[in-house]
Length: 86
Image (spheres, one colour):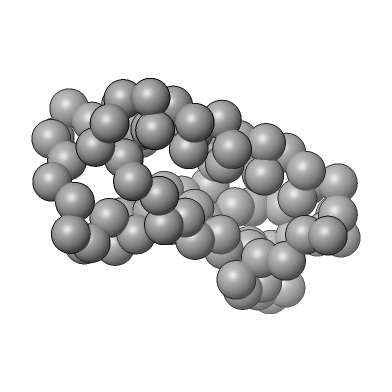
C-alpha cells in the first residue's frame, strides 16, 4: 500500500513526509535508501498524471550542518522538490 500525505491532481504532485533522525551518518543513509525506494514504489501506484514528488524532511529538534543539508539536496536532485521542516 502506498499513501502519500497529500496529492494535488491539478499540478500533478504528491507529498511525502519523513520524520527520521539524520544526525548519524548510518541513520541518514538508511533514511535516504528508504525514501528513494518509497518514491520509486509510489510512482508505480499513482496515476500517471501525479508524477512529481515533494519530499519533506521534518528535522525539528535536530542539528544538521549545512553540508549535511546540501548532501541530502544533491541526493534527491531528481525529485521535484525537497523541503526541510525546521
